Image (cartoon, rainbow, N blue to C red; front, side, top):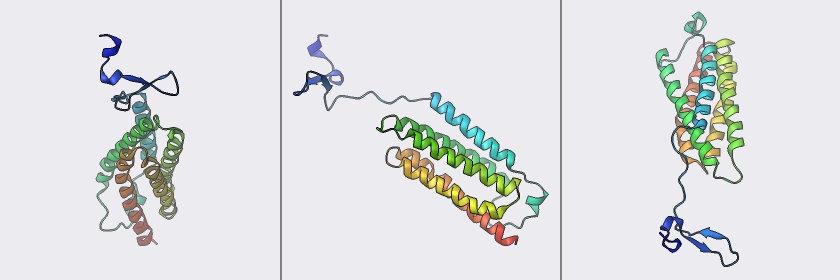
Length: 190
């Protein structure tokens, strides 16, 4: 194939203001990397650390079972699968956001990492307050921070990684429900 017979995806045109070759407007851009990469591994490890820390702080003991709970509280066994799915979706959102952020100028990646770190601390903090310190009243105040950190992540992702924002909506809904359960536990156990 001669240079004049290049496929359309490799066609170039000379810019009238310079000698530099620029891709044609209709030229196909190379797709972003797909599949499992180091970013996926890092997200998975981070989520496992957060989930493991929160799980280690969660003690379902005599104190917990003595609490009066609202009638609409799901059975205790349901929380593990729900959180497992949510943590998977959080990791997926982080990978989607990380990859989409690579194509932005300036890159939103540092802000994303900061918001994810705040969210992780708030998530672990809630378990620490509610289960480990046995202070549902303090956890109720702290859940506002957790909820706000999720909203901040969704708003951060929405302009450049809308799929990542959507992946966090179930997390927001679950934490909203958990806040209602937390409120009811405080109210019923005054």
